[in-house]
Image (cartoon, rainbow, N blue to C red; front, side, top):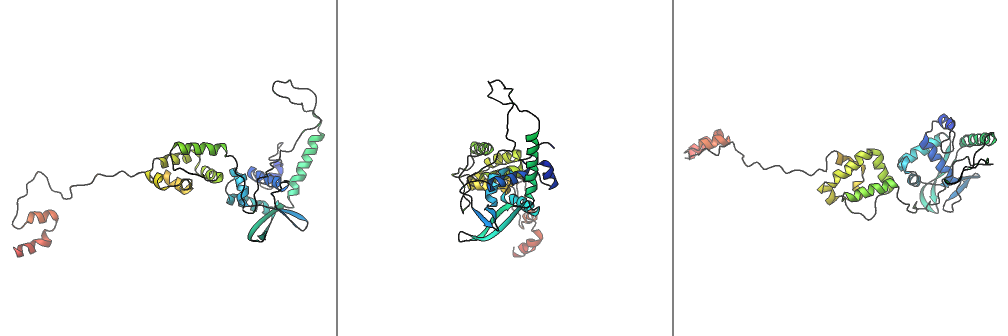
Length: 295
């Protein structure tokens, strides 16, 4: 296997039963861990550096990987394999709570050693790489003396402070398309839309076709338009209910005017004992004898 995934050898990833999402999560963590951002908070335990992170923050940075709960499961998996290690503290900056600090585990060195070995092999290989220019320039035949092998890092300096708040990023293209469709359908107005990860979770759960279909169904529902907020619309259970027809407007059924099986063409004459009326009402045997008695 020639190509790496996020800078990690496919062979090593397979040996540890890791997939592309695990590799993406691991690479992102290491880029954060080695970042020089002043907003990062570290502690040192037994001469080893740990960085404070939350599942929610990682989920916001890697929305395609899933919810904070999904991120937690993946981190637990890496910890079980001793690729990462975790320390939980009960306070931070004199505030009580549970705070997670992460650091590379002992087995992470296997990934780094393999990367170093492969880079050395590529550096010592007797091949030449041509130097590329802009499209209108000719390609030079002069060999390059060096090239960058490792994937570019994902350095992120938007980590917030104790409240896990981060600077609002520009919406992803797919989110912009979804909100455009939302407004075109004249769904309930809003001031602040749900977070990207909430909307992406709806897409992942229902699929794009069913998701947009559910929005269209809701746009035709008087109940939804009159009672729902944007946050209620982007709840997965409500979207599923829309697909199941829960919010469809009910058609009023015509009222039944004829309650008795009485012909409108027949003329009923007064009867001394009203036996015919009792018969129609099914009350002949109940009231008939009493009626006769009092008459």
